[in-house]
Length: 258
Image (tube, rainbow, N blue to C red; front, side):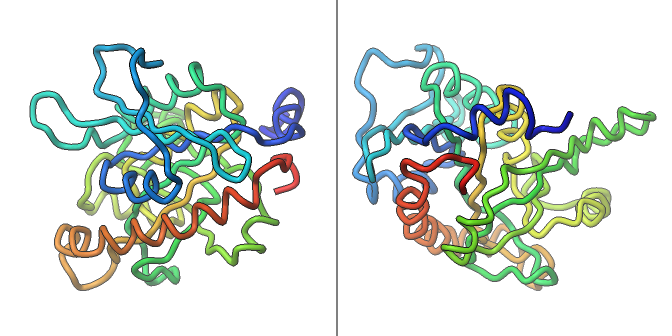
C-alpha cells in the first residue's frame, strides 16, 4: 500500500478550508504575513509558553490561514533554523491547528544545471536528506529518508510553477560528501528544513506543498552566503507574490483535485 491509498485518500477528498504555513525564518515570513494581512496571535497561545514559536493568523480567499515560525533562539537571538525546530513546530501545528494542508514556504539554493535561477519559485516533487549518513544496510536508506510529495499537477499547470526534487541538510554550505548525495538525490533545490516538514506531515498523513524561492545558485560562481544575503528580499518578494495565487487556487478544492 502506497502513501495515496486508504485513509490518506480520505484527507485528499475533502475540501480545503484551513492551511498552515511552516516557515523557518522571520525575514521569509513577514512579507507574507503583511501581504495576507495576518495578525500575531494574542495570549493565550496555542503553543507552550516555553518555546519561542510565533503564529500569525487570519482569513484569505475563504480559507483560515496560519503562518507559524520557530522564532528566535533564546540565547543567540537568531532564527531557529534547521530540521529540529521546524519538525517540532510542524508537529505542534498539526496537533493544535488541524490543517487540511501544510505549505512549507521559504527560500532555497538552486542548481542552474537543473534550470534554477534567482527568484524562481519551485514546487518540490520529492524530499530527501543529504547529511544523515549512516553506512549500514537499510539504515543508509533511512538516513536519506526519501518521501514523495503530494501530487498537485493542476495547480502547477495553472500557475506555471517550476518543479524539482528537494534535498535537505542542516548546513548552509555543501561538503563534498553532501554534494555527492545531493546529486544522487537528483535535487534541483537544496534547503534546510523541507524533508523534516515532509517527515512529520507524512506521519500524520497531512497533505504538504513545498514552495521554495531561489536565493542562491549552488553550482554558480558566487559564495553561497554572499548570494543568499543579497537575494533574500528578492526571494521573499517572489514568495509573497505567488502565495496569494496558490491560496486562491486551493480554496474550497479537494486536495485530490489539485
